[in-house]
Length: 54
Image (tube, rainbow, N blue to C red):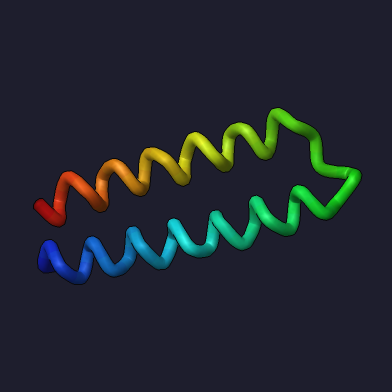
């Protein structure tokens, strides 16, 4: 897998997490811990994208 294709896959996962977090905020059944874990994973993905892109 090339670096560029890896970065594209990370971006896809990052966008998917954004959508999941947004949906979780609208759902009263989602607990804050789950949202927090998703946000941490999203940040980790963003940091890896940045590291690989520069």
